[in-house]
Length: 195
Image: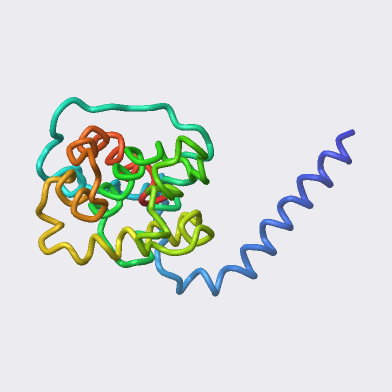
């Protein structure tokens, strides 16, 4: 047993010596080694500033609905189309609030007797009013882009209360109804803008 222990110790010593000789000249001229401490790196995307999302504060009593997967996907599609158009977060808030009022973020087809004329899609846009074909209007990216095109034509939309900006584009019979969705729209933009 002593022989095995002695051979093991000599093997370890020989390995240490060989490693030291091989590494010696290289490490002799190397810079001093400082012990590195682990650093936790957390990558979190900054959420949009609430001041940019709701610059005028909310107006009136706020409404809120629980969203299913399809509605959430539609909110994300509105955000993606807004970013693709090169518009800021505020435009997405106005768009989502408008869609919440018009369709509860549901991409509505023709509703038969319950249909408001020929209104379709997330924004209840009408083919007969020049918003596009039924197929286009029921495409979330297209309908959002069409809404944003109208929004960009409103002078000073960035500085308007949400309901005024939305109403100028939509020309609704209920112009003040958009305001009730501003907080939920801002929350959705804050949650999904950088996701």
